[in-house]
Image 1 (cartoon, rainbow over the protein chains, first blue to last red):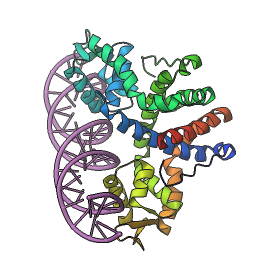
Image 2 (image 1 turned 60 degrees about the vertical axis):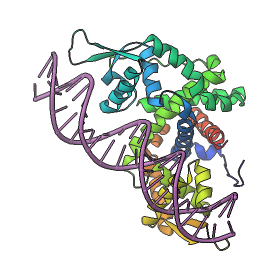
Image 3 (image 1 turned 180 degrees about the horizontal axis):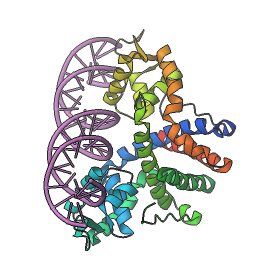
Image 4 (image 1 turned 90 degrees about the horizontal axis):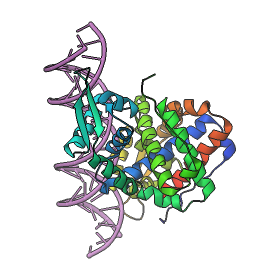
Length: 153
Length: 153
DNA sequence: TATTGTTATACTCTATAACTATA
DNA sequence: TATAGTTATAGAGTATAACAATA
């Protein structure tokens, strides 16, 4: 703990107001994401690479499909995929019907890595989640789903 | 709509496991934070600057105190504060007792800007929060508090 | 010597614009 | 012409290391 008292008041009534809730939620998300990014620095692949691999676990995708799924532009996804292919975690095959497109699929090495990476990547967060009670965990679980839904819009 | 079905299953029992919950929560947080960053691009000040100003609204702080509150290194906070002082949103005064330290405080212009910025910064999120029901909003409110607590550790 | 803050430098991730190849 | 993907370039934000000034 630090010497600085961090006052965190919580008023359900106030938070029922969308604008007030949005402010607090945004700060919480941004701060947690920064911690997640820094705490995960010891990992082998970046969050973006991890997310792309996760999608490919469900099946082959083109680059643009992946870009849209992750809400990034095509060049960003190109970079992510380049890194993954160089590491032998993703394989590229030409699209059978359309010569412009490239089908991306996860390799066995990619499957292995992602399974191992799962525990490492989420260690920091899992540690903190583990000390919560079931009710708080349920809250976070539902919140995660809500955040995904909101981000997909 | 796309031709790709995005399957988002939700199983409360599975999510009670800390490692499983941590994985989903991390993805949700990272994706939402990316949307928040890009959607807020029209704003005047960055998320980091905004957060620093928010802390200074509660009272004067030194640079290192702010860095610790935001979980960033000192040079990063120097950069944030430099930008804020150049914009006249933060004032620097020498510490009365310790010549090394610099006391940072928010200016009237800073107070004005942050109040205006609040609505802009959170517009994207507030819009999505507004269409939820009270129960979901309460979930997100509690989740925000939990995420802040976890990030403070 | 230790601490506060700054400067120098580099890395990561992202975006837009311009380009190639294919449809 | 339009679309898929790549390359070039730039910007934002972060970190570590080295430094200056003060305690």
